[in-house]
Length: 403
Image (tube, rainbow, N blue to C red):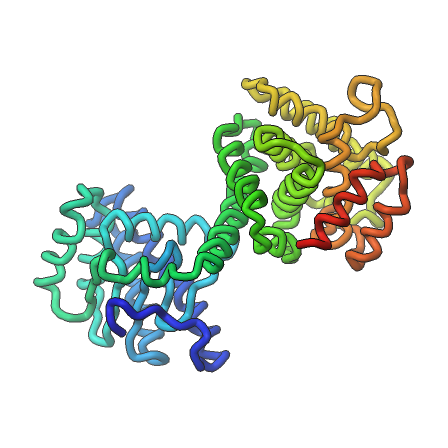
């Protein structure tokens, strides 16, 4: 493969080989993540470091039996292993983002591993990648180190990897960016929920940044982000539900004519609408039919519990105050008294629609059985003012249909 060649994901690669490449790729990325982190924390003479290097060496030799040689390539903020673009999952997101940043910092566009690779060569590679150096010196330092360790590993300069060439399709770039936004949102939301669960303050600036990425992607009319909300992940459905409701709320807010600043505030409130669930034991979620009356009351109290958790945060900006209101009101009918005794806030009515649609079609966050999207949309249209805002419901249906 030349420096300007783009890996072809659609090439005729057997399904079993693709599956093996995905598995090996994730193991290699995870192994490098652990080894580099270990080197930075404990140094390169620690037994934990040598164990991490040996693990990479073992995984590589297993892979060589299947593929002979491996190339890990960085293109357009994605990682490829031979012909296969590695899929970043929720659990592996942190490892992937870390390694991509390390390769970019060291100006490495590709790493090629030959059958002759041995543990000492991997050790030198990890040692070099664990050192933070000036950008101008990064690749030269790595190349100089490789001159003395044989031909088991070869590095390619980032500028020579044809990043501009592989980005020729703006549609592909936008889709990849949307997928990255969704995965970052899941990762950050998981951190938020865990921080709240352990009574720690959350980084609201980080929340606002990821919400702004979601708003920008929705305004860019990129359908990939909306498509990601249909993915079902049982193990992370609470996090996924929060992100999906944020995306769907921003989509509906756009249809309702909200400006970019308002969409940002709406998105923050939507992302935090279910933080009250962090105060509920995890084992109570997902089994509504077997809950005792007391357990059911606790689950039903999560809107009020969310108010407590948000008010516990030190910063009380407008976005925080709207999050308090939305948390309290997001399960209330459009014609029932809201937080201040009046009808529910506009943001709350928007989030209620998004919450109902996602819970019943994709995540089943409270354990409810999933239903066809057409049936749930019919709920919204026939419920009228007694359950959902009728105008917003029609806008929501129209927004989904045109996408």
